[in-house]
Image 1: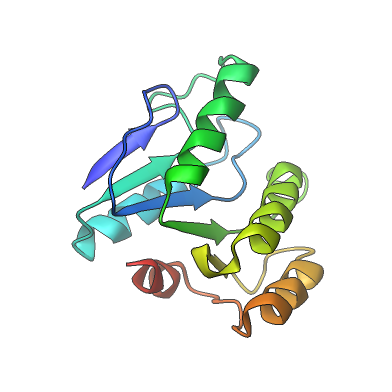
Image 2: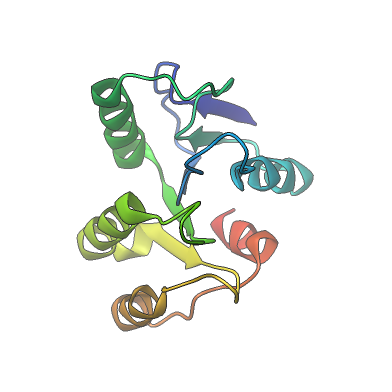
Length: 149
């Protein structure tokens, strides 16, 4: 498995997963993506995992570089996994809402979506996902990632 962070050049491969969803607003809040990477390793995923965070996050980054990296990686990914553990105010997922709406309308077959049961304010995203794909949101990160593989 190759982990491709947003401060690196976007790698290209036929097998790739983009970990879409909220990034914590402060370094005091742990990113959910560390757990996702660990699960993908345990499941034996052998492709590229696009992580829209810096490997050593210090909250300094160039906004334009970040959004262009994400755009390229999202377009290259075979699967976009949206995991939305939304908590307000630490992970409001405002950008995630826009990305989800864009990708579900552009290529719903490429999108997998889940959120923990305690995630806040995902009712519309749940509805949209079910309406566009006929699938229900998955409430367990491991099960969601199994589906991505």
